[in-house]
Length: 571
Image 1 (cartoon, rainbow, N blue to C red):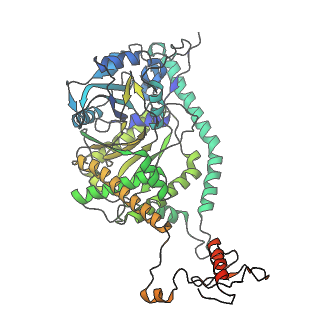
Image 2: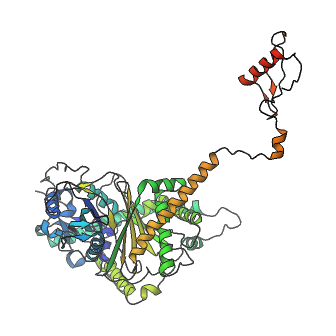
């Protein structure tokens, strides 16, 4: 039987391995609360074990581990783990009962630990009992998967493969025996070295092929953005680039970090956030950015000071097509201003929308040119060595505080399913994500939309966010502020649509006749053969009506029977 081809990590996927240190683990995760099914008395940990045993073949992530090239000549490859043990990857959290805050603290501790690279790069942790603030009892589930294996949207696709849309688990087809991955025992050194060179040559060829098109796109984009005013035709591209990039101000988040983590959450209603975004003419992402900006202003005002320059957020952006279901990373990073130096909420919103509009325009022009791969040959030595040296140097002492930064924190917005999901018959209540923090970027706010909720996951190095609860509360307070502003704007709009009655002075009232005092031209309907004139002039408006009302015509006719006909009779 022909052996399957070796599956190399892409350059972007491998970079997450090269950047990893004990202080900067490179995995992503999420914390979920689950509703306890009615009548459920067993162990949720055992239920999840049985559930996953039937679905472990749905994604190669679960059973593939890394195999490293001889002498680290190139990117690692994925191989099947012949010693795969499900119990190693799905673990029960100690403790009979935990509060939500205790579960968050435990999650922060677990998120700060590296994943063992000798096994598949994922771990699940199950909480059999969590007591919420209202006293209700629920179940808990924390997952972490190395970023080398998937990105945010890939994680959502993976979750949809493992989870169900009803309390009754769907039937899952058995594994296809024709689909298999090479195991470590199948590998030969000569074949692996040859694969490094062939993979690198393919990458160089792909790069050379894409350069003319990329250069053409770049030139076209720069031409479109070039100044058209004859007063400034000589503005250089360097000056334009310098004006577009501004260094971020110093904040408590921009420090060298350790392995200790803090994790807090917040949840907001999805529909209201969408309505607010629509009201200001922005996107859902714009209102989320405004909420984060407002919360950061509040936190910094309370624990430090609000910088005179705007904070800058690094935002991961997906390069993945809607039809692409691969688990690997297909993302890049953009920068957006948060307008934190602007106190006025509407002006701050306008600044955010202007910044995100520029990001969208840049992505539309350069998205196809952003790389997600690079040649494999010697990358672990060159890229990995340089990355580790830079991170070690940057995180040492106060180096991170002294060097300039292009961003203050990471904010990521991941769209998720709007229908409830289930695992082992239990309904998922919350979907709070956890991501990566690094030296100099000690704070990460990731937003996941799920089933009518906007779930915030705030993960940070402990020394970068010592008052994490205050930031979580500031997120909720920012939403309440936005809700108040939205309600006020809706009320103002309603008042503007209501007809306004002009106040009438006493002097004016004396000049206005009583309702019966309407001057009309009449004819004696009994004796006169003169046609009725259809024009009448009212004393109230002074306007001519081509079709007098029935009440006015009838009143005139009745009066004509009692009074001899005369012109301009005043009743």
